[in-house]
Length: 259
Image (cartoon, rainbow, N blue to C red; front, top):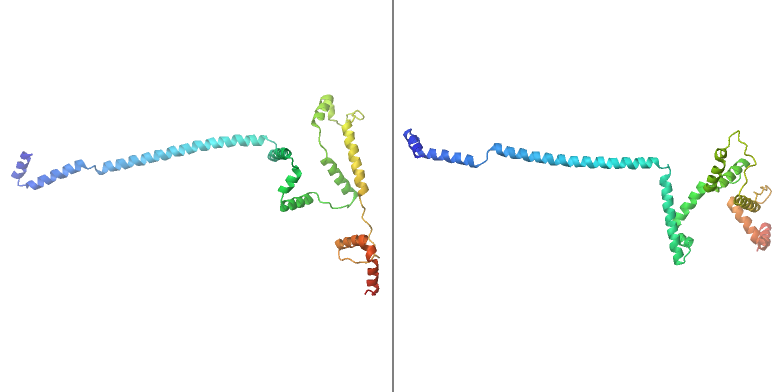
């Protein structure tokens, strides 16, 4: 160091300049240069990209797993009957009803009364409107429409006996499904339960037919004391119950001699 200083002094250079240059070299060696900072920043960016790549890879793996599960569930749903959801909801509702009936029976209460207490007036009116809309009573229009309504009512009451069907299938085999060449007339003997159901239904029809009131013909010469059909019905009922008490008053009003 001394030799360097003497050499520089012999060349006419100041010693202070030599010391300052050495200090700058030591500071540059102690502080990292711009290339080291850039390398550290690049490494940090690389680690960030790798982390995001791992997250995307995990999300992709999770999405594939969920997609496979959904495909399996959709395949199961496609193999089920078309109205399976409605049947499932119906079965769950029936199970809930059975549980409520058991609870009411254990408490000694009537299930129908408890059920009616839980139904609001708005729900009752909505169900009544829905029932009327589903099967409106349009009255008698012609015999074909009356026959169709009777047929629909009877078919709704049919409850197939699957056990009896299986027994007949084992007994007759392919002959159970007749064709134009089949000769099964007179071979079938109805069961006693079937005959009893038919007799009960016929008696119910006879009883209903006896209570049926045919439409009365319209009398053009009758006095018109009503403003609409509903008011006419009301006047007829009032006359039937109170006519004998108000006959004299009505005659006095018509003659104009009422006090």
